[in-house]
Image 1 (cartoon, rainbow, N blue to C red):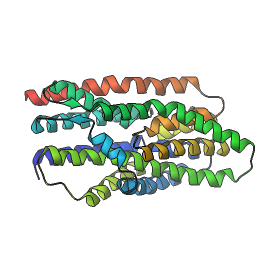
Image 2 (tube, one colour):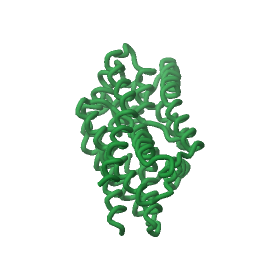
Image 3 (cartoon, rainbow, N blue to C red):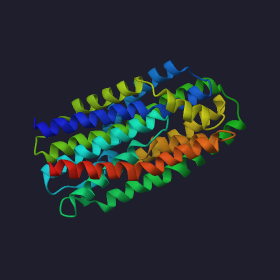
Image 4 (cartoon, helix red, strand yellow):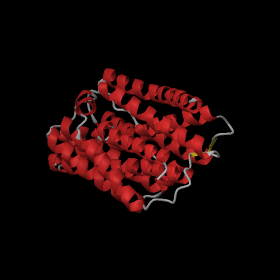
Length: 316
């Protein structure tokens, strides 16, 4: 295997690990914040379900991976591989920095920023953006917030009129959310591994081993916990009872499932935070503002870092 391809795979795995560590906790935040599950039990459930979702992703919903892999076309493979390295490094650096402050960031958003910054560093002759693929991706991101909030508010209204064992259903919903996170994000980064093979001129690796590697790495990252993010989303963003936590998970899960079926890459973070605000009571505007600020900074910070790293690597 080409050394550069091997390095890119290691960096993609680092991003997947960080994704499981910093992004996946959103899936269990409501179950922990509402008191339906303890943190350790919820983290273990999320690790198992993230593995299952990532492993099943390409078999059930291959359109998301196809959209991500076609975002950027690189005419010059060696420069493209350098750009991918820079993009992955920028995602890891940004995600870890945000985690330090307990802020949930979107690795989907960071991925777009990293690829954009690298493409700009290569110039017009070094990279070409696929307008249709970007339109689908940006449409998914734009719909994440209103769709998540509306779906969660609708489910909360239904649950207010009906009785159910909210705690038991909240636990099931947390598992479903973690599985859907694996479905969405497992594909995105698997697509980058396959892209590296293509750019490096290597024979395509068998999909199943890469799929298992992706799923295992995400599960390992999830098992690390991400407690600060769980506390921010599940406890500080809004007041949640098990019933409201169930409404948030049901609404977010529905939006993620529809997005996967339509081939729209959605941000689990955006959908889940919006769902908590839609279903919860007494929303904390200060916490919401901190999260929104991190989202607004993701694109310029990741893009600029990827741009600078690409130029630095090319110059060296």
